[in-house]
Length: 301
Ligand code: RIB
Image 1 (cartoon, rainbow, N blue to C red):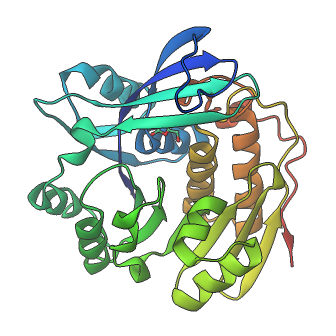
Image 2 (tube, helix red, strand yellow; image 1 turned 90 degrees about the vertical axis):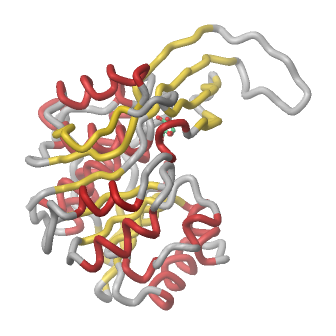
Image 3 (cartoon, rainbow, N blue to C red; image 1 turned 90 degrees about the horizontal axis):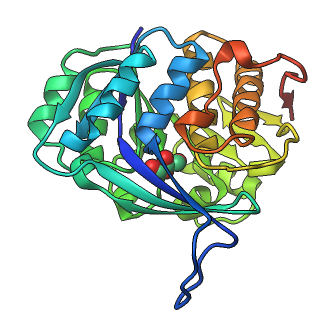
């Protein structure tokens, strides 16, 4: 069983600021760090560090992004499907406030150069039982979902950042939604977590969903079951990449055949570690580094 993550690779320009800049305001930052990032790359690294055996990343970079491909390789991720194109690598301008909150501005660059031919060629190497992991920082999501469904892959969609591209996709083909409250509201038009999950169950009865609630934990809905996982209390330094860490850890646990409650606990532990350190990729913990303390199972409702 293989995991294919067809996703973004970004260079993150991360500015430390006292507060996130307001419209019309000019402020000085307290520092700039350049990190590897992109929701796609972060989730591949999270899966690899969580112990996933065979993670393949597909996507594209420019010449300036070769170091991102090297980083994938150093983390044990298969990189044979990553293209190098004559355009700039995707990047993100990130402000991290003293409170740990962030805001992100994206430039897609090579991430939006996928062609149907390239997508079909990559997917031709995958089949029933394999996982396809998607986020919304690349183009071609609709083609990816159609083709993956036709080939029998299990589609995991993190519809982040949420926009009209997501709603234009054949979402009923999604096996598992991984989404936060903002994305859940956009997808369903509902505001309360329970209403969001109920609406996803109504609209997509064959799908499972995990709704992450930040410091309030996460809730799983699917197959007629509900499980709730508390977040582990930590002092947040930088939340960038925490959602990606949760996603990568949860997917890895599912791929290992762990039951949903223990997969939720594993993911929550990984994400808790991630917010205690700066950056996206640098903050993603290795499975061996998780202490195991407080890794209790999620509770059924
Ligand atoms: O989820 C965090 C990521 O979002 C950052 O690494 C940035 O590149 C953006 O894609």
